[in-house]
Image 1 (cartoon, rainbow, N blue to C red):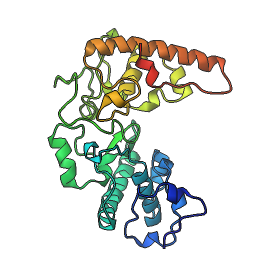
Image 2 (cartoon, rainbow, N blue to C red):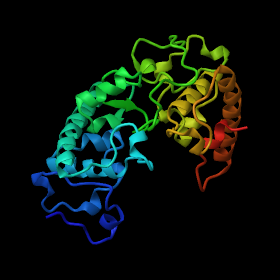
Image 3 (cartoon, one colour):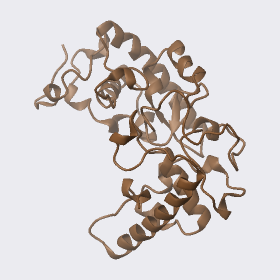
Length: 284
């Protein structure tokens, strides 16, 4: 039997997960299996080794899906229908975890994370790739777990099909195509976009403090765009969704640079708390 734990977390998340068939389910304390922190960093992922640890992460993965009112509009799959489906998708999930662990062992320049591909079959994943969705067959993105959950499937505003400036030698620029627009800036020439997709460029006080040059600001602005959590209907989002064109991106880059300067100033003056970049940072 699965142990619900002493608190009410299992009740709180009821209906958001199904425990698959697994020998590790016996005696599992579900109260320990709801936090994204179980799998949302490279170090946490590296520690997933046993069947019980994989199962706990899989339950957290289900609970932390960003499911909208109509799950058919979401990327990936919504809540599972029954134990049989959960058991099947648990197999896909474990395979994905191992693949992401292997990538992180081999890569020093970026960090792979779990995303909505991780409980899909190969056939299901191929539907996204064939419909022009980001992805080249990998199960994972560098960045913030589920970047951009809920893309429309018919392309993006500002997607010209042209290779972006400074795309580099890898496929990251292709992977994130349609999720960013490079604004007009002298720093764009020669910029290696492969270095400009991770939230780590701006998501800590130390990282923010290092943003000084136009090139560094531009790189952070591209990462800021890529890591927006865009839903199917961007009008329902806080802030703005994907930009329509270079003119809009250029205007919002100005707001972003101003915001970065203000946040840096706050952090220099405050010792009790840390200011961060948020959805206000590209608004007029």
